[in-house]
Image (cartoon, rainbow, N blue to C red):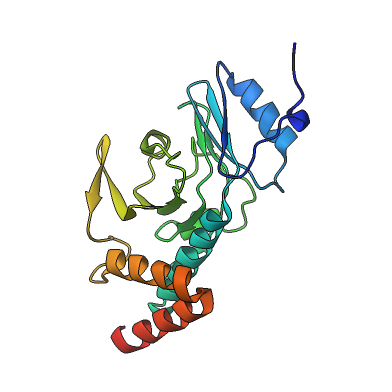
Length: 212
């Protein structure tokens, strides 16, 4: 018996795993889910995960993404933010939706594009995951060739850099050399959690004015 997707309820912070999903099935499900939805998906070798983020997840995504924009603008670096775009590669049998992402070195490759296919388009230079529920696996990003992945969990902030066939944890970001990204992200996200987003962003902008 088949159950329609609209009859399945996934509560915030929970996930739904569907196994033995073909690429054709995956694309049909993606179409049914639509673009204007609160859920996030990842797909790897026949396993589809659908997750609905918690409110704290969304807050973390917004403030870290805003901090990246502030840095790029201050440094006068051209970029294209693509948010939670669905990145797919049929040949690799992989798909993922980061919480937010940025094209920096390859920004010109995505200008004017509404849909991306990583079998021909470059991956984002920087992807960001707010992994509150510990759902995110590195394999999707690894196989799609994303060079830099940031993860923020309840344990803290982590920069992962692609090194051949694996990710290695780093204290620095190649996109922001000589900037203490780990320290800045952790301290200002904590400020946002205790004093609010506006206070944290004002404090971060002040740091940028004084140091860059």
